[in-house]
Length: 123
Image (tube, rainbow, N blue to C red; front, top):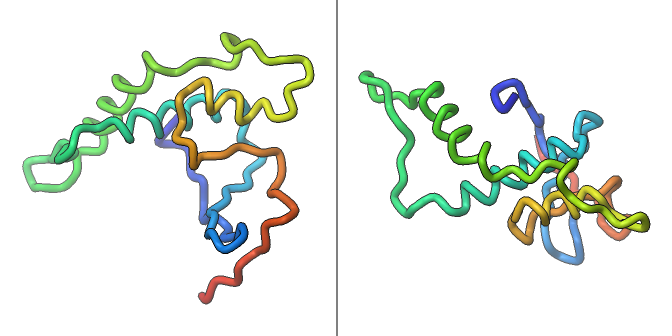
C-alpha cells in the first residue's frame, strides 16, 4: 500500500504567518490516517545517522527500505477498529493520528480551516 500511495503535490497555506502544507485527497480514510500517523512516529524515532539500505551499485534498495519500514510500522499501528471514539468526537481523523503517536505538527481535518489563506506558489 505504501508503494502505491502517491499523495501528489501539497497545497501551501498561511496559518497566521506559519506555512502549512496540505494534502487534500478523497482516498484518506481512517485506516490511512492510522498508517501515516504510525509511520511519522516511527520515522521520527529513527536513530541519528540512520541510512537506508543500498544496492551494490550504491542506489537506495527500495525493496529493502519498504521491508524495513513495514517491519517497524506494522506492529505499531493502532487501527481505527481498536480506537474508542466518542460519539461526539468532532474530529475522528485527529483522534486516529493521536492514537498512533503522530507528531504534534501533523493534523487531520475534514477540511482546511477557514482561517488559513492559500499561498500562491510560483511555477
